[in-house]
Length: 360
Image 1 (cartoon, rainbow, N blue to C red):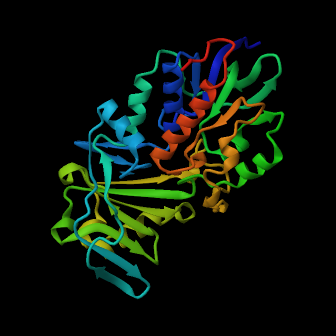
Image 2 (image 1 turned 180 degrees about the horizontal axis):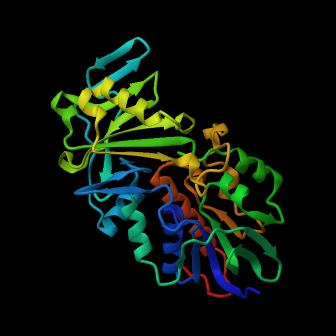
Image 3 (image 1 turned 30 degrees about the vertical axis):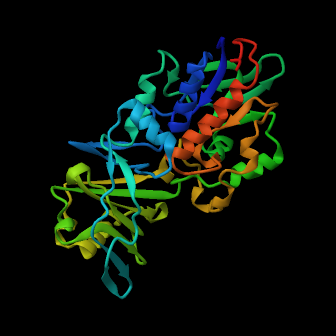
């Protein structure tokens, strides 16, 4: 029989929200465990090594006014650089391809020189030993009037005063058995809230040089024919590594997809685009710890940041902290950090039976 393992807080998910919440709670003196189903941290921050930089297969940018992510990058020593903007845009329609003057897609943004997942790796490296537990999917959460919340994984039983759910709400409702069930209005909301990038495939093609820039192109394109619907320059600082990337509906991925993408790239940027040095397809809908089945049916993005996500559930003990629950910047890294900040504050505002809450 598994022996109960008691803590102040259990955080579910080691993406940016989960790692940020864990870091804040550990810093405030709370006894915290962060459970991650995958064998890696970072969640939707995933980067493939491509010296002298990396290729982001998940989150890529941050923008002006997103202070939390800018401050975090500075604190962790993660170098950033400006997204390449100069050049013209390509438009692909059923009638052919046209060149439009100027970059009509990209806005000023910043990128992470070592890849976006350097933020997650930096936060994870700063946690005490044994706080982060990989390969630990949560299977159930049971409310125990005497001991708070019981959290089960295949290999452990944990008790905690608070649980921070730092995974998309619909994924939590799909993967975790709750006892008792959350309020019915919250369940309906969670089951219909989309997963950011959950129904998307991200395609990255790496080249020896950013040849499109020599032709006065920004690497930006949008298409009404597909399979990629929008494209951007993903080259690193000073154009190295050189890369283009685009988004496609995850349902488009299948036999012949790579060939269709390479044909599209050559139509937009010339024959050199048909033969990349490496080619990556990250289908986020196929990630079982990101998106539940039929995620493509969830499309009401107005549910992001819903007021119900701002309120703790299960007697004030369960807190939502994924980027989908953020009031501002939902879907961005900044949204994940803001949601984590809110959840950590809610936990720390509640007096703890194990550790006295900080006083002002």
